[in-house]
Image (cartoon, rainbow, N blue to C red; front, side, top):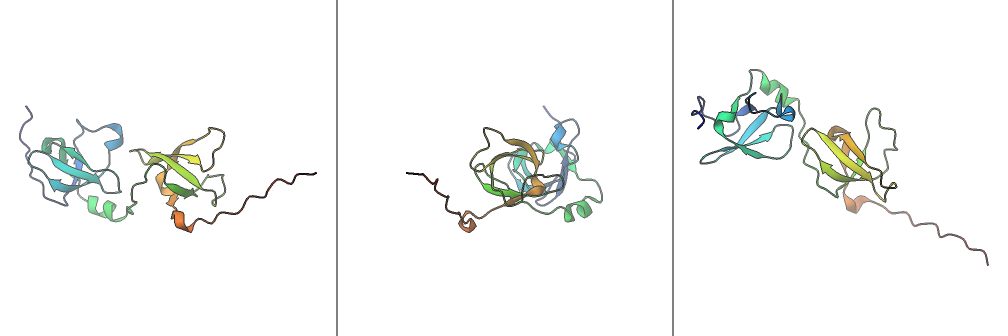
Amino acid sequence: MPASPTHSFNRNDLVVIQPDYARVIDRGVIYKVVRLLPVNIEIMPVGGGKAWRVAPHQIQPAPTGAQAIVDTIPYQPPLHSGQVVTVAGPGWKEPAEKLWVVLKEKGDGKVSLALLGGAGGRYWPSVPRGWITPVEIASVVLKPREEAKTSS
């Protein structure tokens, strides 16, 4: 049975996962306390992402100066599978006007994408989330296809 926590947490406190419980992708991530539940605490990554529940003994207060780091992280809403997006960033070789479909958003800040309309089964498994911009589907203008000219 885990020892009782030495620190009580409040809503909006900044915390980090204890090193003994942290997965590789959790190390260095700052979380905000979202809800205090009867047994566990619900936390969410400050930079955006999925909320999850942890036992109070698995977290500790964020290091001093964490608020300055948090203030520089822009919020990015989560992406959903099937969402249409555009991609632009350093080293991205595809045209910025191409449309892509989100396959999944990973917990490490990377997104798997496929070209809208297909690319022969090819997909891009590790595109940084910061390069991606969601597209409002209502704003997409489709160009009519040129009909193949048949000679008679």
